[in-house]
Amino acid sequence: MSKLLQTKKNQVFFRLFLLLISFVFPINLFAGSVCVKYDKVNGNGDFPFNFRVIDNKFCAGGTLFNPITKQGNSKLKVLDHLRMLKKMGVKTIITLNVPLTDKVTPLLSELCEQEALEHIKIRMTANEIPNEHQTQLIMDRIENGAYVHCMWGCDRTGAIIAMYLRLKHNYSGEDAYKAVIKGGSHSGKMGGFKEIASNNKLIRYFWNNGIQF
Image (cartoon, rainbow, N blue to C red; front, side):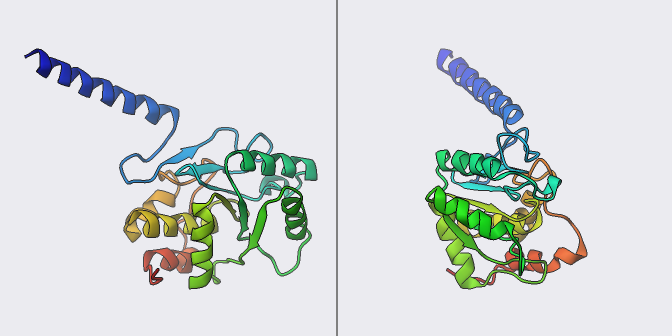
């Protein structure tokens, strides 16, 4: 009888523990992937805009230059973000919002080189998605610690997160989609993947999962 009571007590304590950490960090414990969401992620504080960390190696969010200020963060602020990411184990910065011409992307490459970080640029839009080789490259870098970002850390970044969940954690297309939309387990506090028609190609990219590795 005493063993039975002890077992029940242990079960109660475990449930209380799960309840407690669910309030401290909004995470998904039961699908094999953990997403930690941070506070003060408006791009002006300690973390990049819409910042979160998935499985303790996959950092995701918006531009380090802060979309709220139209990418107005100073070089020093961006360097602060890069150094913080390095301390978290990031070795590669993957930029998805790559315009045909701009000043910010070359500057980020320069700052990454200064901090001994790899900077990979893969242009991704609502109509242009990574091919098989690019997707494999992204997944490989994530395994070794990467920060994946677009402008706002919502749609393009959300599609990469969803693809990661499909390939690495065997999520269904529907479950991956639910994880990255607003309020989902892997969405950002400042916004998630938008449920709009213009994102259809991004959805097909991860939902159909035609890429084989």
